[in-house]
Length: 240
Image (tube, rainbow, N blue to C red; front, top):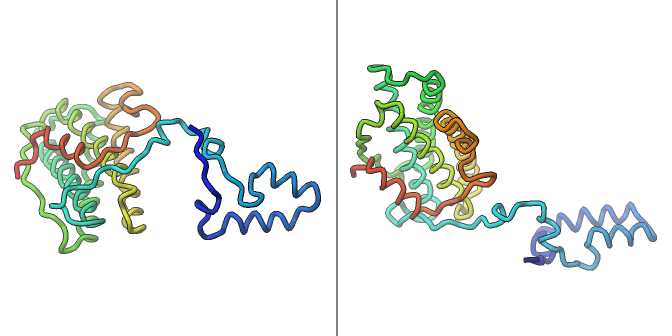
């Protein structure tokens, strides 16, 4: 489908038109006319979305806003942050318990998995700390968890970590267009990129294939809160 956008719709502050105007002043005669025709800027011309974005795969253009977290998390950006905090509580608690069990039983034999556990435990605790600081008194309480022994079994640990990290990427990207405050969006983006790195590392360790690195292919699939929470609940790790 070939969508058309008016330049004024996407250039609300006039920056693009101002830059084009300055460029026009450096051109004259037939050269200027030719430039305008090539750029499609003359007279507020219509800019074809397909021409501008045709190089992007269709999956990348299909990005849409995911459904918001339930009201119990709070309204607006606070609700999204508490939703994110709950996911970080889950991850940090899982990795903290696995770290404790590793110290006690040395259940992880694979060197790369041990390195992953060390790095990700610190990262997820930092995420919790940062989100709680931003939320202050609005922060939700940490749920109680039962990981059913998966924090002391290497194979089960890898599977759960692979699920968590990829789910985190889907969850953060699924709320990106719902966030109103640019500072909140910046914070979310700074976390989702780290989650993506975690996901690719544990994916390669666990699957030993390109699937593990990019299980959705070249483009990740954002998920709304309902699908993410359903996936979390299916683990039966959250007790209350």
